[in-house]
Image (cartoon, rainbow, N blue to C red; front, side):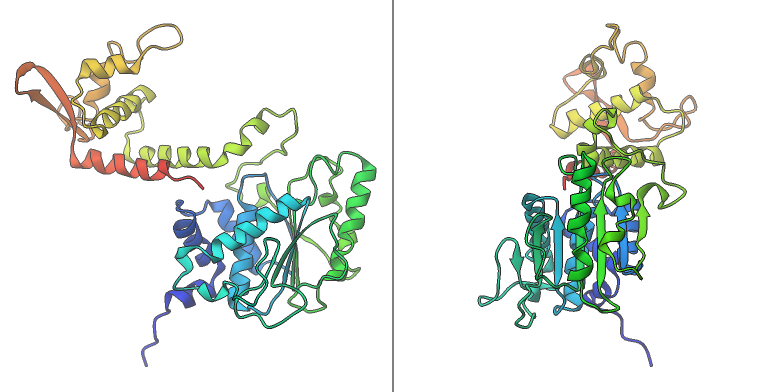
Length: 375
């Protein structure tokens, strides 16, 4: 008997990595997750019940974990989730992330039943999902680490960046954090399926994440660690960002650099290995002018490129070699790409305009798609 194919709902509920890819594309409008983001997703889905994820801020660990919360509740809406952050603002951010997924139109035909009913809790920091039965504990509750932890119960407890620069600078502060997290082991339900998940970026060499948080666990438990630079041999070792690190000023722009890298990678696939940056600039300027409906000449491209830091023209005498790379292949230029062509001005045959071929337009649209989206 021929097996019935999976429905989209079944496919997403079966695999968290499928769910993450769907959310990335249709909720965030981004390209597919990076390799490290997919590694984190797999670790959340199949890792041990006591686990921690150490990664730089901006890598997406909080969003992936919030997506994991939605996925778990979609599969079992009777579960309860408690998310603890360093402060109430962080807790509210997590609550809003979860709600943004639940209420997004991409879930209208899939997980719409998770949206709270009229008679259910639906506040910013504590809310139920639609199918949840009446329970003292909300389906999702978000707290700051200094909030009222005692009295809560949860199937999944997530400690999201409970350590930050303000609350972990001294040993006394770190001891207070360790004491607060010691409540986690008392809050989690005594079930084999109950989970404690830590997400964090260590702030110092004495970070509480390096203990590894034994105070939060019962004496029989061990905490398995997912550390970003150990995720795959292909991932570069990533240093912890300190206040005086030059990297600290750019870490907040990770998505900008991700989309930039994807665009450059796409061009690298299409281009011969010896293409220069100035040749790439030539193509970018042609695309810019054509996209605005302008007739652009070689001289105008040369002028638009401007000068380098020494005052020399970026596309001076080399302009001919730069634009010819993108014309049709010839004996002189056998590696030419065929992304552009030259068209004479009907009113002045001495003037020649640069146009994009269908192949050039296709490449330009690929790059535009990669660059335009923001999280």
